Length: 351
Image (cartoon, rainbow, N blue to C red; front, side, top):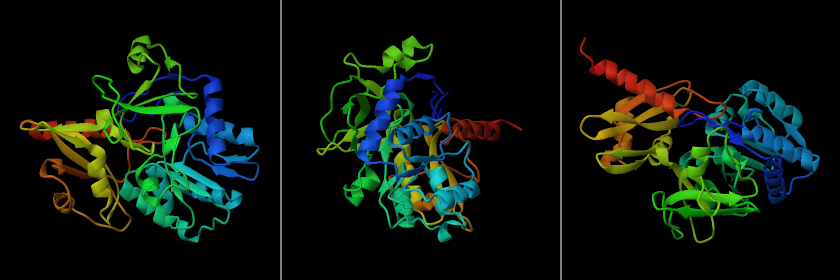
């Protein structure tokens, strides 16, 4: 199964069937799934989620509704016909396409138990407000972990559900390591999330060197994700380590800036990358998708950020988009960055 290629080219992951089966069983147990459940998930079969949740519902004798590719109108047709107990769009590019669609207001969901999405807090709050009748839950995982490692629960507080990724599934262990020394960090300290468990992959296809670098001596997989564990064992995700910017020597989290932009009432979704800069090495660049019918200028977006975050974190470049460069389900930031770099190079070159 290949990774989504959000920040780099996709990598092939060797996943044993027992790993996939064990993860499916752990998720089904956590959410007490049974024959009466209908799990709607638009992730395609070449995405780990499309395979994992199909197997999970086969285990429990439930009903799985999938899609070959996501189309909002087809999705609404499926949802109206099958009355899901679980909606698992998971990614905000899909979830917001549903909640912002004209058909959403008339959608009846009489059997719905849970909705799942992973996004910054302000985006999560928008989505939870669209589904006031059920809890919005989140997750942490990746292709290398057969899908997911941790989930929030309906019993978690609203703050925990909207800001964390929950606690580890049965059969999984999570710890936070210093990304350089790999020393174990205490609860509340930020570092690199490392995981070990029943659903872990065997390694990268035809790449033993990268495989060896990705594991600790005691078998933990270094995820490449910035995160934290709190005293209660809740997992927090702060973005890919590769997604951290260095602005004049200062560390900037792309996720933090994206969260601020997402809180603007006119903005549907924002993505942040680093742009080359002669003075600071790199500066913040923001790509913004507006809500239907809304208007916003680049200067207004920058002014909004200036009121809420440190000056060095404020975007220096703003671009508005209507469509995102996508893998199966995720926005490919490396393509946004490459296009911006080409544009800036052309502007800098003599006529």
